[in-house]
Amino acid sequence: MGNYIICLAHFCELHGPSTIVCTQTGIAKDKLDYLIPGNSKLQQTCQSCQLILPDNSRNLLTKQDSTIFISTHYPASQTRYTSLTKLVMKSLSVETTADLSKPMFFGDVIYGYCINKIFKINDINARGSERKYSLMVISDGESDLLMNWDIITLYFNEIIDLIQKRVAMVAAKEVNQDSNCQGGDVLNERYLRRSLIKPKSLLELTNDDEIFVKFHLWAVSLLKDILK
Image (cartoon, rainbow, N blue to C red; front, side):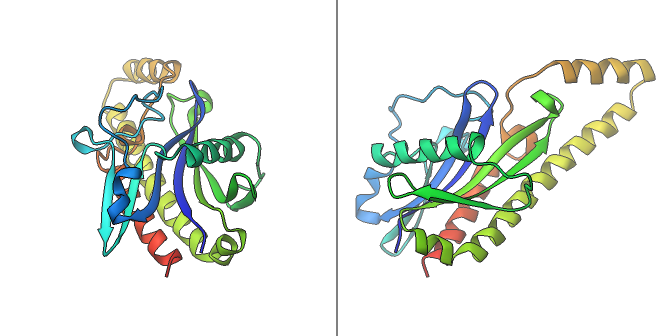
């Protein structure tokens, strides 16, 4: 049985390919080995690639019997951190496909194997008016990962649909607000928004303060199904 990491990564306009949140399993008695301490030095991040949790938490944890599911900004293990960084870089800048509706598989025995799916969301404050993300399931076991291809891709579609629909709802609300303005004011407002390229968290894009909590619960459910 392979060791798994579920990851959401983003091509940040300031920092390049960056991990936002990763979820992994561990043994309850060893949970401190997986948690990011509150006094740890933060990585260089901006709003786009920062993990923002309720109450300024660094970790999310779900316990089931002797197993724990932990979501953090990055793995506490240096080995896993290095491997994940390499795979995130490949996912968002090296391994590409013309058809974003299809997942990809890549990897090696050194850094692990990955099934990932790229998706984009529209945002007028992003370069090119869109932001690029990658969902990744990583394992050190190639055959274990490929055996779960169907269930992984099903879960991918579920969370991508949730995020994109929420972003679309927020965008539609902004358009509706614009329509209530006077003609000239609308044009000026839209121009100013497009000219202001700035980092944005998924919290702001989805208008959901618990979007990363939802990701954690989604990732926990996926891991449970994979590890059955």
